[in-house]
Length: 403
Image (cartoon, rainbow, N blue to C red; front, top):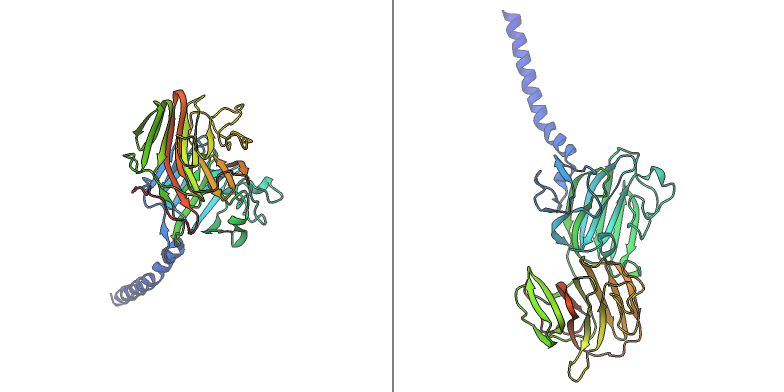
């Protein structure tokens, strides 16, 4: 019995020792499996399999299993998965892997409506085995705009690490520990007017890919927009209806119908950035005026046209009777973002993420109202979330709206 007892005692001692070693090693193994646990200031973007905190737009088909987010490839463009939260400046980290012919992307500063990769930014994720040279469709590209400095992605079905730092105007992308983007966005004519804040999003291109360990650290926000509409009343606006246009509020949207009329801000501004989401029924005519003074006598300032007709003399985005918009990047009946930049005698207009008109010959250099116009006997125009960012040093108008 004694040898057996000694063996039991020895085995018990070993078990105790092993437990002690496990107690020391286990936390290390946990940290190795989840490298995000010790990253100061970072928060996970996905917390459960229900995708809490995210919204599926269209038929986007994403699922979460552990720390992996999978797009199964059954969806169709332009479906996507977007965050409920809005982000301006941040550091974003994640891993991704691709199969053969894989395509996907991560949207930054994505809009509520419109083309995400043009209105905001898309970090392209791709099967790079067919791209011999860096291109605007290569992994790490600012999709459609700026190729990566080099091809840095790994072989198919291997995980790639990505770190994106957006601290306006600096945008940096590190792919597998290699710097592939280092941009001053404000100096790029194509990128400077894209949104500075918006949703994060995952693209569903109808091709499968996977991501994991998505986490983010917020950096200080600096952009200051003034909401012009509270979503429930026309407080801060005046309705002018010379020919009976009907204005209403529906689901937080401003809706104009059937006639000629104007909705005019109480506030006035000279130099500013203005943006609004718009949607017009086919053949409907309207516009957005700025530096407006009075309707009678007629002193309406400058008009940016809304008319979703490609062959119109002044299609959507035109600086009315001054510069015709060169493209019509909208589909009648669908939402798009309309952006107007005004400084002195200059004006730039951007529709659905494309620069469509610009001038340096504005006739009215003065402070004035913003006015939304309905100018059709039938049809509707919807406006959503109008907002303004006055130029530095310019006093804010009187239209602040709590949202």
